Image (cartoon, rainbow, N blue to C red; front, side, top):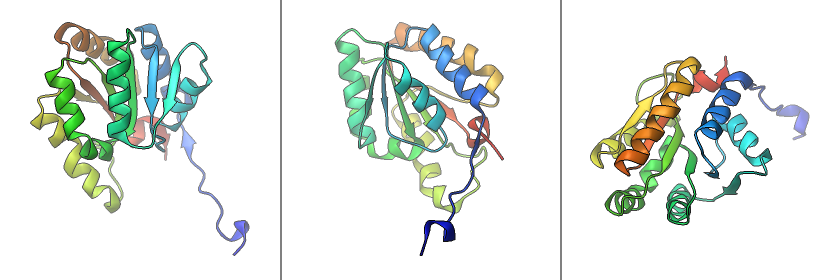
Length: 179
C-alpha cells in the first residue's frame, strides 16, 4: 500500500488554546518540562520544545517522566509533566512516593472521565485517570474552556507550592482540538 492509500487525518488544533496554556505556565514560573508525546497536547508540547529557556525532556514512560520532574523539583526547578491520562495508570507508585516526599509537580494530562471522550479505546484511560488521583488524594481540575486556563494554572501552582503536593490539570480533547 502506498502512503496515498492511507492519508494522515487532518487535526485542527486550537493554536490559541495551546499558546494560552504555554504562556500561562511560563508566566507562573514553569522552567522544566517533561513530556510523553500525546495528540491532544501536541501543540503545547511543541511550544515547550521550541523554548530554549525551558529544559524539556521527552520520556518513554509516564512514571519515568514523573520521576524526572520530581527530581528536577529537588534540583531547584519548577516542573510540569505532559501526558495522556492513561499514563497515570502506570504511575501509581511514583505518584505515591512524590506525595510522601512532598515533591510538588504539576501534571497536565489529556482525557478525563466524561468530557469529550468519543472513542471506546479510551475506556481504560477513563477508568484510571481520575480514580488514581482520587485514591492518592492528588488535587485536580478538569478544564471546561480555554478561557479558564490562566486562572487555573495560576491557582493550581499556588496550591502545589503552598501544600507541597502534586496536582493535575485534565484537558479534554475539545479544549485543544477543533472538530
